[in-house]
Length: 196
Image (cartoon, rainbow, N blue to C red; front, side, top):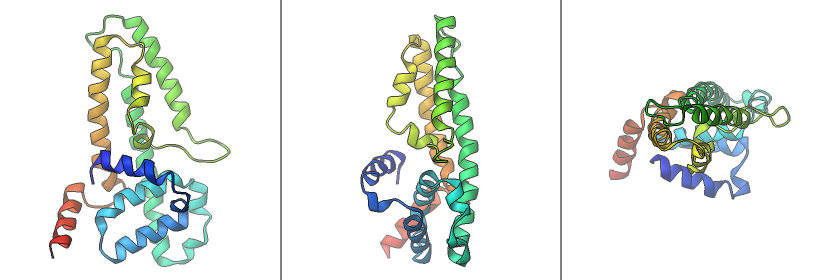
């Protein structure tokens, strides 16, 4: 699936309380693996890692099952990879002012305030131990519009362009974060499966 379809479905899934929980995600991932529906796995792994605090992944009885332990290892490794990707995306925010900036001091101050605000939003809370991964946090572009408010026109344009490019790059890297084939390979596998 493409990024926008995924994000619209995530918003719908967030309204279904039965859809949440580590055991549900583990069941989805194991079932998709068993029936060779590998194209489901990047989204399922991503959502599992996004919705499950690290301490729950480590302190679960699911480690006693070999199938579930393999999935948990992939989720934990993917969580680390996503956090590295999140930091790279966060660095994007600090790129203003752009070379064509017409209000350098104001744009620099707006950028600094946005970086601080963004950092606090994606930093795990001490109570819950969860944080939003970048793709979910920036899913509907509203956050970017709030960030761009106060930037000059050239910086806003540069920011929007860099954001769209970075989102696409982030989406393309999700399968590899969980040691899965690329989206292109997964799409080919899906098409081959459904053409049989």
